[in-house]
Length: 274
Image: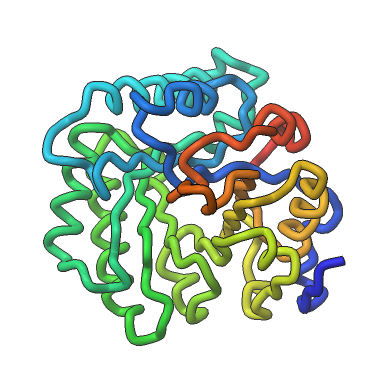
């Protein structure tokens, strides 16, 4: 039984509300065609997926990434137009986010904006995933400046509906003020051995589940229900669970599909609303 400390309001998803997937960044589409194809399947409970070519957009448009991005865009647009009436998940999510590495606040603002413009111009992304986002109070003003500019860029483009989506990839609970700087925060990223005993920050109870995401690797198939129960209990609406781990030379356990992908998709199922 996981040891969780959460106020009553933080247990708002314990009653079986639907979860959805946030995919933190698969391998290049040329190396992971099955993963990218799976995201475009109707009914996949996808909130968003991250496109990362070379710690950013790369130096020029990549034809394989353009194709993968196009499939995901088309799947979302078909659902939004009602051409796939059963694909309610795709209509409420399914955004493609560009990967911006903040390097814990060390990357210059101008570099990040240049990468953001390339993502918008080349891949028509619907938002951004800000990896390695600072967590301390001192870093908040710079992050607010960046997210405000990114929202303005997305509003000017024709690729992002509803102003786009910004996700801060902290990987842990940050200073509470970051919750007002973006649409969603990743408040856990790590192994199952830590997650099953994790504790939720009390301030998260002031926000609905769609404001938080959890990424957990090394989750055994036999513990999937427990992992989903923890996510709901802690008030996370977006997840990515995988049985892959960072051992045996696997540098990024989130770069491939979990072996139980079809099973976890069927367990979560369609019907998500954001």
